[in-house]
Structures are given as C-alpha cells and as structure tokens.
Length: 149
Image (cartoon, rainbow, N blue to C red; front, side):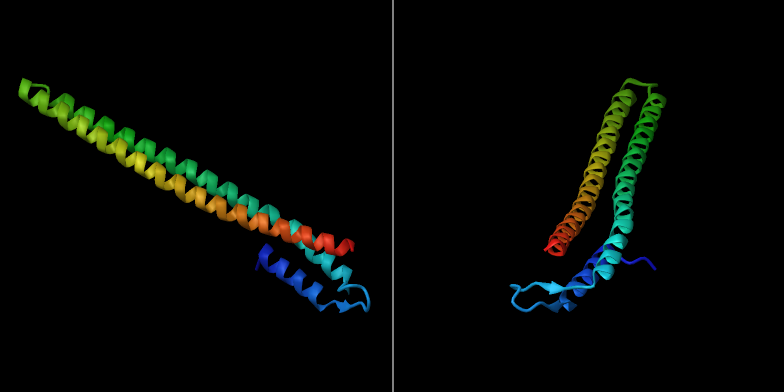
C-alpha cells in the first residue's frame, strides 16, 4: 500500500518533534538524521507519482473534450442528413433548416457546457494537486532548513 506524501511529511514532522531538546540552544533539537533522510528519500520517490496523477487528469480532460467534440460533430452530421432528406418541398426545406440550426445550436451549446464543466473540473483537480505539491514543497523546505540548523 502506497503511503501519501502528506503522510510521509507528517512522519517527518513526528521525527522532528520527537527529537531531544538541546539545552541553551534556543529551541533546537537533536533528531535521528537517518530516519529523517529515509523519509525525505521516500518523499522524493513518491512525488513523481503525484505529478503523474496530475498529468493523467490533464490527459483525461483532453479525451473528454475530444469525445464531446466527436459527439457534437455526429449530432451536427445527423441533423444535416435529416435536413437533406427533407428537401422535397419548400416548406419542408424551411422547417428542416430551422430544425437543423436548432439541433446544431443545441449540440454546440451542450458541447460548450461540457467543455466548460470538464475544464473547471480539471482546473480544480490541478489546483488541488498544485496546492498539495506546494504545501509539500514548503514543508520540505522548512524541514531542510531545520536540518541545516
């Protein structure tokens, strides 16, 4: 079972908190450097997984948009085909064109709505991933800074 970067950072924080206080050092602690380094190494190994997850989200978005575009094009083609079949009489032609335009407009509107929904979803997922990665990065920086003290 894979351990999340967040959990590993919590473990690192525990190692730091469990360190023995050094008297007259202004709050500095002695920590198990090997344990801290092991956790940092685990974080480095697992960070690419979270990056891969973000890339998968972007790829899923592209696939969803492509599918939505294909469906919209199929709807447009079906509407155009139906309109062509109704070209026998002038009134039928006028009605078919109106119906084709309505279907095309609806298909484009649905595709646009789906595109906006997918884009918003992917943006939210990427923003969440970015926040998690930024938080992890900031925490690692703090830990590294503390290790250097």
